[in-house]
Amino acid sequence: MDDTTGARRGAVRDGLVDGGLVVLAVTAGFYPAVAWWAGQPTLPPWLQNLDYAAGAIGCLALWWRRRFPLVLAVVMAVVSTFSLSVSAAALIALLTLAVHRPARHTAVLAVAYLLSFGVYLVLRPDRTVPVWLLVALQVALVVGVAGWGMLVRSRRQLVASLRERAEAAEVAARLRAERSQHEAREALAREMHDVLGHRLSLLSVHAGALAYYRGASAEEIARAAEVVRENARRALQDLREVIGVLRTPERDRPLPGVEDVVELVDETRRAGTPVELRDVSGVTPGGRAVPATVGRTLYRLVQEGLTNARKHAPGAPVLVRITGDPGDHLSVEVINARPPLAPPAGVAPAIGSGEGLRGLAERATLVGGRLEHGPTRTGGWRLGMRLRWPA
Image (tube, rainbow, N blue to C red; front, side, top):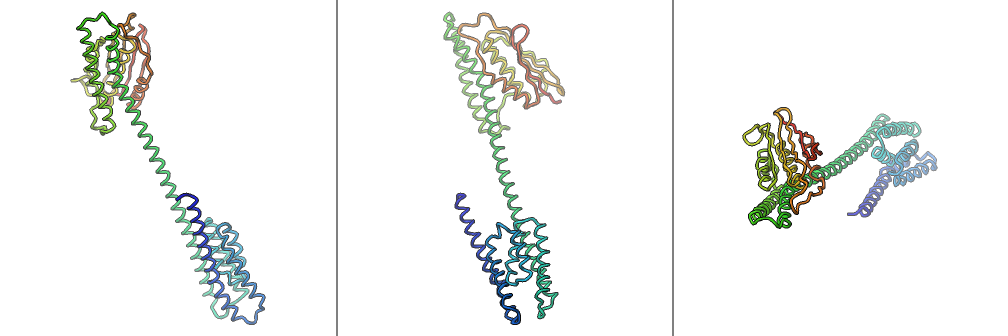
């Protein structure tokens, strides 16, 4: 249902309600008025006609009760001082005021209605019914109508507040879902860059050597081809694992840690890059325990550092150093020397996009660490990170 249809139905419903209230005001107001004037033959007819005219105008004015509730209620209070036929319409106007205006307006007009009824009793005393009974009945009607209207107003405000809260909660839930999806995509992008970048850099180096190094022996070609084949197979396996991140709960994922650094260094050595590992802190297998998140971040830094050294400084020796103590900080750095003046045939230093460093900086922030990188004095490059190591 669109807004136009809803507005049309609302207008029809309001029109039916207003028409029903006009009929009720005429019936409940004119019936006692006609009966009262029938018992007053001595009063002039123009007073009776004035009463009926005021009542008719007051009943018709209920069509505009939603637009001008305060004005209508004030006019009804004044007319009620001399007209009996407008009494029902006046109560409906008071009810409308209580529904659409603050409680202080309702309280003031309720007192005004009681005062106007007092004026009416002075102008037209009724000797057949005790005054106290009439006053009690009027007080009960005015208080009941005003209380009913304020109750309706409070309920509408409560419903509107709950609707606003529900809409706000829906918006917040949508924003949280979008943020979670964004974080998941960022995590997936980091994993794909870290994992596949390492494998593909090996493939690039050795495939370039096979294509351009014409003087290689059969044994060297076979060794390079084996490296290409093995890393292609592992790249496919790593890709399957990264895709599995989307389908597997985090607690069930086989993620790398600090104990895998030795294997990573050995693999890089087998690929032809001279790497020295100095595990001063003894955090590799058999050493002191490192939290899983910190260990995974350390592994990714070493992986990114070796990948960058292989891409930007092929053939240069690399030093991986890990230091620190539990309860203090854990520091890891990957330092490569100045690249050779004549790189291997077919292998040219690559131009990086910086995505790996940005990903490492995000990882460091998540674990309360700090990323450091820059050139060394000897013309090489240093990539380091300082992480918290809880005792």
